[in-house]
Amino acid sequence: MSDLLVRLRARGWRLTSQRRVVAEVLDGDHVHLTADEVHARAVERLPEISRATVYNTLGELVTLGEVLEVATDGRAKRYDPNAHHAHQHLVCSGCGAIRDVHPQGDPLAALPAAERYGFVISGADITYRGLCPDCSR
Amino acid sequence: MSDLLVRLRARGWRLTSQRRVVAEVLDGDHVHLTADEVHARAVERLPEISRATVYNTLGELVTLGEVLEVATDGRAKRYDPNAHHAHQHLVCSGCGAIRDVHPQGDPLAALPAAERYGFVISGADITYRGLCPDCSR
DNA sequence: TATTGACTTAGACAAAGTCCAAGTTAGGAT
DNA sequence: ATCCTAACTTGGACTTTGTCTAAGTCAATA
Ligand SMILES: [Mn+2]
Ligand SMILES: [Mn+2]
Ligand SMILES: [Zn+2]
Ligand SMILES: [Zn+2]
Image 1 (tube, each protein chain N blue to C red):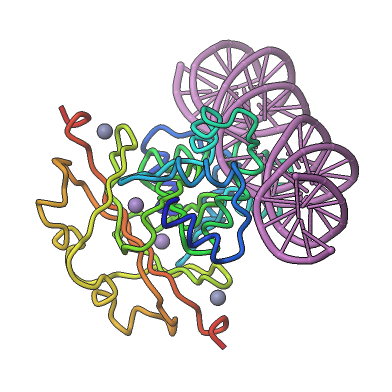
Image 2: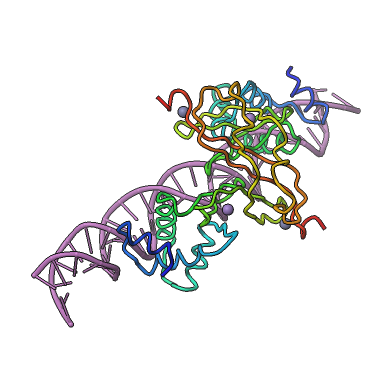
């Protein structure tokens, strides 16, 4: 059983086949699937799984901090299992490919107090945009 | 007539009452309205204006580079008339308020070549997140 | 003021996501 | 091992956000 499922069990989650399959589909690096993509892959392993359950499970994983929601374009949200390692995203404007990146330094340092409008700032999300090797040829 | 309408006229646009109203609604600083918000305000001035025209006009303004599309959350896109002055955004996680901010330095400098995966990078969008003075009380 | 192609409109359609009542089941209790 | 039940899942209705089209309107030129 994956570390994720162990943590979920420890939080009182029932380990249903549906939740196992969603967790399996989200395993890996540079994974940024939409809810419908998660559903399509889950259906391959568990044909009767419903869209509602995929949305429910993804939402619960986000609430628990096990998965990040990433909005890279104006389209569907993407779900990112790499939640325990702070990172930013590099997105191809041609094909939509997404890579995890780790810029140097603290992005908050670039924002002077005079530009903070009295906000208590908690973080910054950076989306680098460009063309991947395939799309720039 | 506003500078924007002059520029549109110079590009061969017909200056319809609908387009004037959309341009008026988008005037101002820190303006980041959704398409439906633009429509609601436009209807106050021109009751018969349709949703389709608001979407069409916003899309045209974006194509012409007169308005920016901003996706700060996973919800509706926001339309930003401050397109001729590069800037980033500070968003309140409580109420959704958005401020334009101007961080120092070049955000691309923080991304080492080893983290670029062969992409030709064209820019970076930064969303600072936090709580506004009202929401942090 | 007549003409006409650009523009606008209402509403159908689509994509992404939420919600609910009814049925199923994981896991603790016996 | 079986029972029990709160937690979970399901299909489908519904909502929000956005796109598209056919038919009607009108801004700009002559
Ligand atoms: Mn990621
Ligand atoms: Mn802005
Ligand atoms: Zn690409
Ligand atoms: Zn606020």
